Image (cartoon, rainbow, N blue to C red; front, side, top):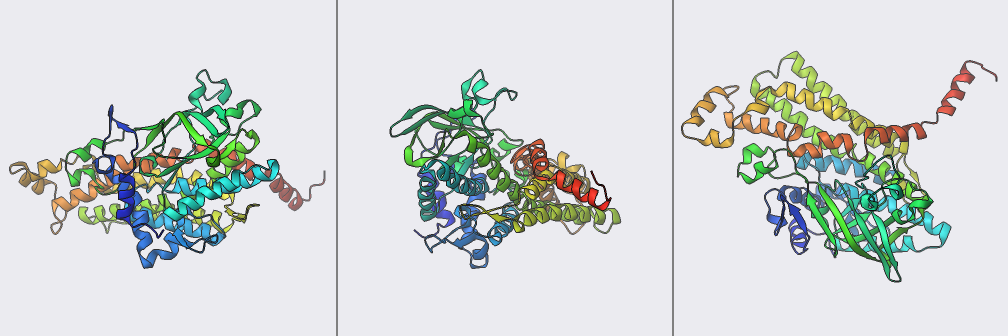
Length: 483
């Protein structure tokens, strides 16, 4: 099958009967729902750009297994060039959508599961790697979007999975049958699930022998029996119901989160990638987290490009573009944004080949990348709000702007420079609000903190990877210390 167009992707999702709930009701037509559709449009862009010749080398790649051109989101990284192109692709998509385009987690799950299953099979003689490759070929052939589900609700975080008072706080196997397994539990914060054909499930933490039932990885369709989703709320989400293009800020693109509930979902044997081998749960988590922390050096940078541009436009419209402090703030925003990109490229360039043949990023640098992402976007947002001014959070609605009585008043008092309309000034301020405070905050500001793990998770990995003893030895050698 050839690469899908964006429209073919939309129609393929329309055919899937997913069980989705929002505001206490089942969503009967999620594809055309005004709150959910912008998130679908963001994923569509990953298909639309793959059709454009100028983006072919970034968005697509020739599969080494089949010789066919596939979307990079279903590809297994085979070189450091692949790793770098991944980051460049993510920056491009962030620039084009100013939102989360949602397919990164599936791509990162692909690569983590690929190498981990190879090593499980090497030890146990299992068939997990073959299972995954069959699934991978199926997704590549049909150009599917795959969600990656790692984060469990966790319950009491001081306790291991098997110690929880409610055993479903971590997703688990509740029945092992000759033809497969049955699982119960949930996965939280799933950005792309309602726009995905399939979902790969992974454990969320390293585990001991007592947690055997929780050490499980598999793939199921997004409409699997017993699987349903509850959409999370976002700031300003119901603005999309009001019919105002201006007030939404980014009317075409966006992202939504969901809780996925697995209520006795059956997984056939050929879709299982980990089933009780607890010592490999930590490896899978570490590798996935490393890939996903690399991703933030691309996607967040692309969205940051849009926010920096919006702040610069706001400065123009406010008549302050030539002020030295404004120029300095834009320079600082750019410096911070490009530093994030440097981290994403660096951990890619320093990548290495795994035993399975695919390429892994440098884990230390990937965690440094994400640690910076937990800080720099917040400063970029602060500076954008500073440049934009207070009207970014006090502007009247589009309905007021269109009102026969109120419109002339708003046009009079909220105009900036003479040659720019009040409407255009409001449009750029609403975009800044969307990125900094509104429904896109889940894809930029807040998600920069908790996506791919909390800041402390990266600090733990940095401590493990920093090779402090080697650094001590270097210092002792220079100081001619003999012990």
